[in-house]
Length: 158
Image 1 (cartoon, helix red, strand yellow):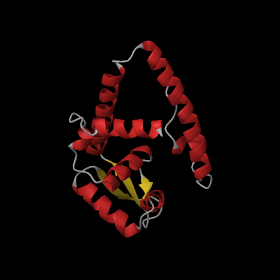
Image 2 (cartoon, rainbow, N blue to C red):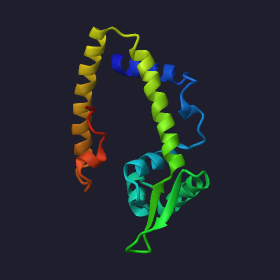
Image 3 (tube, rainbow, N blue to C red):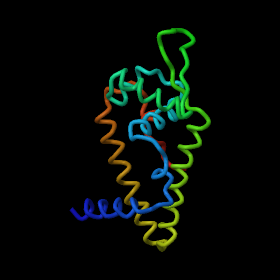
């Protein structure tokens, strides 16, 4: 219960960080999910995106239409099968995802700089263990996913 309460408090505090670019972008959660998936799987087929998001093709089409209008993604026909539409991240899409990620990284660095080395070491150990458990759990949940694990999960930091 202490962990859940601390997590909830941390989320509430982070919501007040007005320097976070995520708060200034005009994207829905579904649009952001599409951008993130396309950034990891550039040229992904629309049908694969619907499967990963759990939405209908019609719903995805509307989401992608808006992202195309905003200049964040482009659509193209598959070179081998004209029925397949592929979604690509545009330079503007890469830039907005970088800004969001960079803003989060800077906020994290600002907070971590206030901690002493001993606390940072403990935090790193705990987070590494939580990641191990999260990967194991995700593998159990996604055991029917044909994509190799390295394509499904964020790689370990070097």
